[in-house]
Image (cartoon, rainbow, N blue to C red; front, side, top):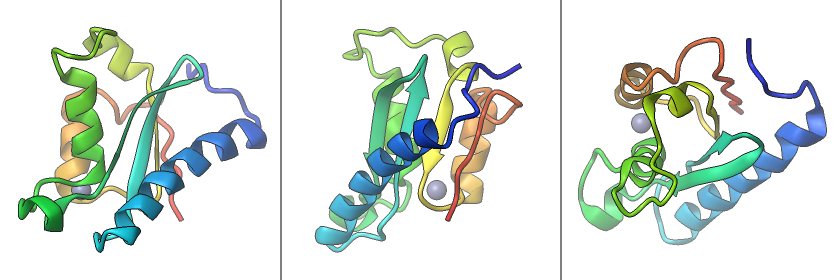
Amino acid sequence: MSNVPNDENYHSRFMTEAFKYADEAYNIGEVPIGCVFVHNGKVVAGGRNATNETKNGTQHAELIAINKLLSPQNSTHFTPQMFKETTLYVTVEPCIMCSYALRQLGNSDSHTTLFTF
Ligand SMILES: [Zn+2]
């Protein structure tokens, strides 16, 4: 059972954060996609597309945010269980590469809510 409140304002707050990342991507000529991961009501990582900037087609917003979560520099020490409890807010439905990564990390079950526009 998800611990995500059924509250439109709660979700809008995090979608706004995801759109800030998308806007940042747009302003530097990237495909305007952004996302945030939310755990226990807090943004724990965010990302935006960086494929043009890095000339690396794998640098999608979701993978960048996943890398931040799993980075040794992340003081949260994100565990696989925490990943299952995390909600992803993303401005565009994840591509098959990102969907599969999310699934492998356990972030595609009933605890995950994807908001797409
Ligand atoms: Zn992707």
